[in-house]
Length: 592
Image (cartoon, rainbow, N blue to C red; front, side):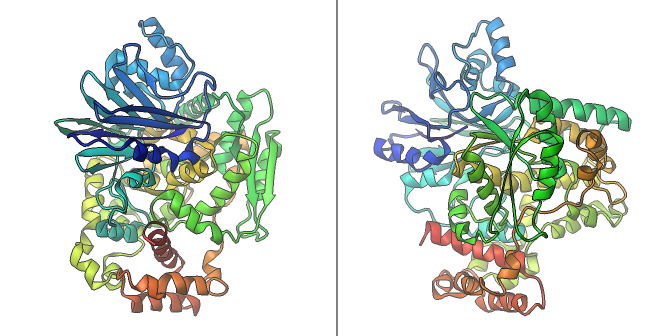
């Protein structure tokens, strides 16, 4: 787990070495254990790494360079099947001299080029400079667990794990009105766009080749290539338990102390239960609780910890974490209206005092229809409507501000710069087309896997964990688990109002019926109630102050009505208010 950064000039432009080093220093929280630099002024290329040492502490420093000096590799992430791959490489005549997973990437590339890296099972953002081709490859993991951004600047391509790294070279980059419009639609900025004009994600499951002659993109993995299969419930349960168990097993590879986040929900309890079967010592688990029972899951976490004999660590904390909101948005580089980032940061800080890596249950809800929003949406028979009507209804279901509301919200100036009503067509239409062979439940899940996960829900554990210099590993994001999930018919995931139907049947014996079928709670804080009282001055400052109005983004009369109707109890506008506050916090973090 690390942070990476670099540049490749397609012209005579050379990024000053001092600025190049600043790219690394600003993301040192991602890797406080060491820095590795490759800088070639003649070739006008640089690759850097800030290391959080998890595997092969002594010999794992990056960059890794081939014996003949022709290939240079840095990565952010972990390759969980590196042991098996190293054995295969040794037999094939490409032995690894270390036990570091980054060397496996180098040897695979030497053996078979960039396509050989499709064997990787892990979370990663990789940069490879090949002197023979005079080109750089940027490769990102299948579902976007690790962030990766790139930007064309004065004849050079800059790339990094975080956008703030790129800004060390470019200085201020204008904001993107299109991304603002998309953020207000989804409550996060959907990849590949970002809130910085021209800064793009390397999309999940893709690699870029950057040469002197241009940039090309190749998609090497997509869940849309998975087709539904028929099997009995017993066969699905057996397959699920086998694949998830192995996904947990290979994520226990570590040369440093590790543990798990444990909420007591079905996902984290399942992961901890499987961990306990592979370890000879108690699993070290971490959770936080609140005094308010509506948001406190700590009794469930305690129950799960006792069931599996864990070394459990729990702190009851003040739910008032709003003072950390601005810092969280800075670490995220973009606005997020999801305040669950704040308790995630708190539990990461807590765990980081004892361990450097944790396993989590992230991603299971999107794979197996775990959210109530799926239950509520599919309470109406969606097989009876046309494809167009289904797409329109689901787009509305996942929208924060729909087209009509954004027309009212956005200022005249912003509306003159964007097509307000084009977001779904640009973002969702291609995804619905790619998943047209899936049933309606799996189509909805595919949309959220492509957008919600990489745009928000995987950003949370990565950025909040890295802010505390701790690595998060998510077994449900193993590609074998994801592919198995999308081979399943949707009605095995959501049946008769029961979310995660087959998944719960599969893990009930492991975690017990009480934890399996307990009511789902969201990991959040009661910020909406605070907006009406002690946080109202903060709301008014971020939403309606002269500093805010001067940006000219919104119709501030409309914004004032949103806040007033919420405070008067006329309508719950918590999500809308949070999003607008996040926008202003982001502007203040990056533009002052």
